[in-house]
Image 1 (cartoon, rainbow, N blue to C red):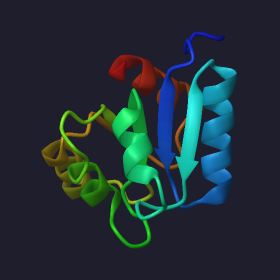
Image 2 (image 1 turned 180 degrees about the vertical axis):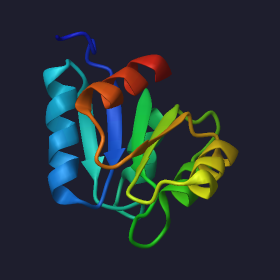
Image 3 (image 1 turned 90 degrees about the vertical axis):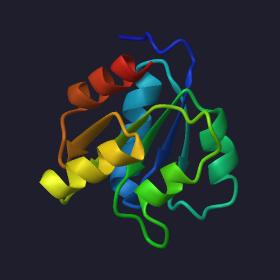
Length: 120
């Protein structure tokens, strides 16, 4: 179902396979995407600041996904965090950082799309 209306979703995920799968899912759903391997990739802050929504891995090489998100200029776009290390502490850290949702890997594509649509 194509209903993203070309809105930009920025993905920051160090797992190349997951990053490609998320990009493909979002593009097939009508979203524009731009993806980064880490928070330190050139252009990551600029692209993320202009996005309508972010999908960010909590555990990234270098700066964490939470530090990346907290370091963005205000007003930050809504963020959906993903992690392989789910738990109460991770969920609290995401909420404290202003994240909307934490999805535990592996997650269903439908759950990700629902979270993106809710964020928009």
